[in-house]
Length: 331
Image 1 (cartoon, rainbow, N blue to C red):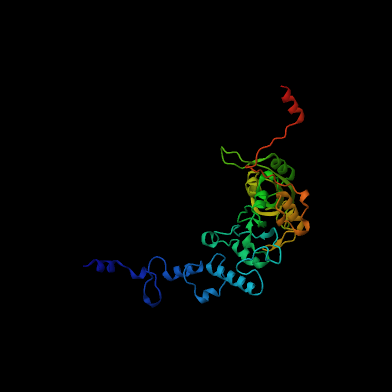
Image 2 (cartoon, rainbow, N blue to C red):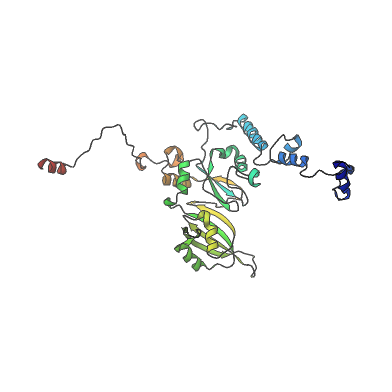
């Protein structure tokens, strides 16, 4: 008997998965399902029926839709698909934009659906449109995917470095929800003294101050939860580790303020421009050029600390103290 006949004799058709028409399904992945999955993430040709459905944040069709909307805005006199130069724009873009990030959204402009199956900040850029033109901005600092709250967008790299520089002493405010009842004084003393969150053999001490503790409303006595509001300079991104080392299990983390900037009444997944007072504080803190200041808050030239510029090609001339010059001449 041939090898094919032996294989047919040993094949039990009753155990094979049945499909319509009496045939058997091929082992492995279904090619049609695989092709449909590739189309969903933006790979390959997308049918007209798929285009009518909801767009994915990272798909090429979403980018095409964004360009189409900006071209329509350009036809109406807006910035269009290519933002105009600052001198041609008839309005001033804010220095910072405040965004209330919801939990579960990747706080980055790349690496969303294709790598993590999560929505990233490119959908926020598309939502902002020509009102803020967030494609000219970048996020400030780092925020975990599970965290929520205030995320700043900046159009000044110098300001971003200053806000994230620990040596500048910018205070970050967070609200942590933990399981259990928190003893305010005890936790405050421990965090002020410093909490080591480093690995074994590598010390990494971070500090914070507990400003308020309150119980979460409508929780049971068997499973109480607490809101802990903290202020920190060097532990904004490691607050979860600090709370864990202090013996509390973290349920959620929310960023509520950076320096004088806070969420106020900003709703989740919404954005707004910073006020002139907040922008003036940022400009003074980072010593930004006058072109970035709010027009109504620009100081006089003599009020600003000008940077000293040294010319290496200029001849060196040293002015001596008259008393020292007389002392030298007598020696």
